[in-house]
Length: 111
Image 1 (cartoon, one colour):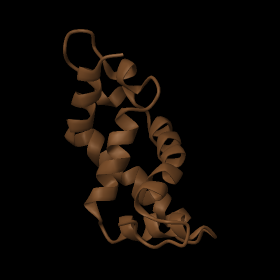
Image 2 (cartoon, one colour):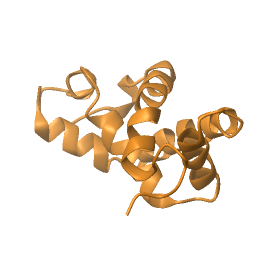
Image 3 (cartoon, helix red, strand yellow):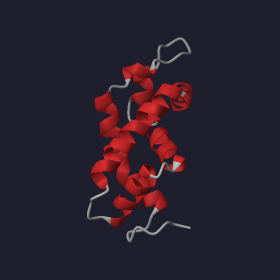
Image 4 (cartoon, helix red, strand yellow):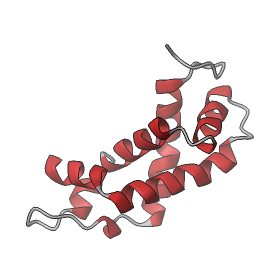
């Protein structure tokens, strides 16, 4: 795996936008969840909290095999090699991670 490819992917404008879109789409689902921390993430994303959207992008770029998938082998990347299905799966897998980073189990922000 190339950390350069991972860093380039995280910085890629269209990957950022696609990751953000996936997170917002999932927020529509999780806003009615029974877990307060999951709801808090959804609410923050729907209020356009850029910090959470950026966290989803960072975690997606670091996802298993993702940097390898986009690496063209010549110092460039192609973010389109990450499918929408990949992004959906990464977003769903990272939801509890993001919830745990920002909120406690009651949905209150962590200090």
